[in-house]
Amino acid sequence: MSTIAIKNTRVLQTKGDVDVLEGVDVVIKDDKIVAVGKDAAKDVKADKVINGKGKTVMPGFVCGHHHYYSGLSRGMQITAGPQTDFIQVLKEWWWRLDRGLQEESTYYSSMICSIEAIKAGTTAVIDHHASPNYINGSLSTIAKGLKETGLRGLTCYEVTDRNGGMKEVEEGVEENIRFAKECDDEKKKLGNDALVEAMIGGHAPFTIPDEGLKLMSKACKQTKRGMHLHIAEDKYDVVYSHHHYNKDIVKRLEDFDLLHENTLLVHGLHLNKDEARIINEHKCFFAHNPRSNMNNHVGYCGVLQDVDKLIIGTDGCGGNMFEEIKIGFFKHKDDGGPWWPSNYLEALTRANDLLEMYYGRKFGRVEKGYVADLVILDYQNPTPLIKENLATHILWGMSSNVVESVIVNGVIRMENHEIVGIDTEKVFKEASKCAAKLWKVVDKIKA
Image (cartoon, rainbow, N blue to C red; front, side, top):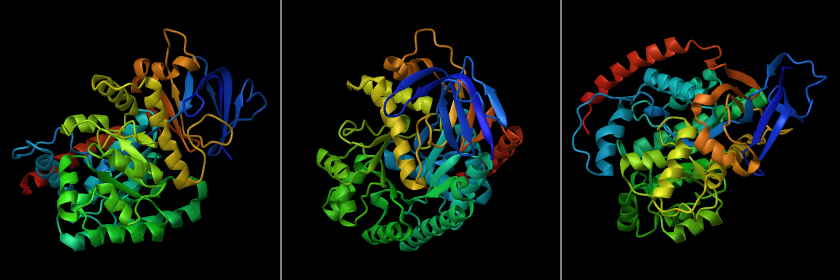
C-alpha cells in the first residue's frame, strides 16, 4: 500500500456543500482519501509527506467535453476555402483535420492534451474522438496517451456517415463496442487502477441516419454505456431534423431510446424549452462549451438555465477549466445572464456525478471515502477566503498558474510544476514534428 500525507494545509470543498478548512491534514492510501482533519496524519507512517503549509488542496477539475483529435491543430498551416458559416468551418477545417489523422498523430494528440490538462489542474477528461481513416483501434490509442500520463478519461468514437455512408457508421459503432469491452477487461484485471472508461459516441444528428441511431441504441444497451453526442450546435442541425424527420432533435433521440441518466448531450444552443424538459425528464447530462461557441460564432445557449444536469466542457479548446469557467461566466454576464460565480462552479463540479456513474466510486470532494483526484495550489489570497466567497476566488483570483502538484487516483502525476515520469520536452518536440507532417497531409485533402 502507498500512503501520502499532506500536512497542515487548507482544503477547499468545491462540490455540494462548499467549505474552507484551515490547518488540516489529508491522508491518502492507494487510490482513496482515508482521513481529513486536524492532526489526521499525526500517527500515520506515510511513504510521502507533503508540507501543505501555505498551500491549498482541492478536487481536480473535470473537462466535461473535449476533442483530443484537435491536439495538433494549434496554428495549423493549410490552404482553406471560405468559412462564412458553421458547416463551412467544419468542412474546411475540422473534417479535413480528422481525415488526416493516423495512429502516430492520434497518439501525440492524446499525449499533449493529457499533459496540458494535468498542468492546468484537470484530473479527468471526457473525450470525443474522430479519425475516419483510422477508426479501428483509435480509441485504444487515445487511451494509451491517457494511461501513460496517468490522467483519468472517458472516450468514445463519433459515429457519422459524412465520409462513407453506412459503412462508416457501422465501423464507428463497432469501434465503440470494441473499446467498451477492452475497458471491461481492463477493469477486471486492474480494478480501481483502471483509469479509462468508454461511452458510445456520435457526431451530430444531421450526420447520423435513423439506422445509425438504431445501432447506437443497441450498442448502449450491449455495453451498458451512455451516448455522447453533439446536438443543435448550429441552427442547421435543427432545420435538418425538421426537414428530413419532421421532429425536434431531442424527440428523435428519445424515439430511439438514447436518452438516459448516463447520456451526455453537448452544445444544445438552439434547442427549445420542450426539448430541455425532455432532457431533464431522462436525467441526461448537458455540456456547455463557452469558448468553442464563441470561436465558431454559433450563438449563445438558449436553454442554459433550463437544464438540470449542466456541466462545463471545452470542445477541444484545451483542458484548462480555470480559463473555461472565467470566459463562460463573462460571456454569460455579457449576454445579460443572472448567474454568479457559484452557479458556474456548481456546473463545473457536477461532471463528477457523471464520473461516479461510470467508475462506481465517489468523486469531487476532499473527504474520507472519495477518490484521491486532487490538486495542490500555491494560491496567496489577498482577501479572506471563506466558504461564502470560495467560488469568487476560483473565478477571479486563481488560474492554472497556481497549480503546483496534481494527484490522480492516489498517484502524484505532477509535483512542483513538473510532470512525473515523462520527458515532456521530448514528447512536445516529437509532437511538433508529427504536426508538421499531419498539416501537409491535411492540406492535400479536399473539403
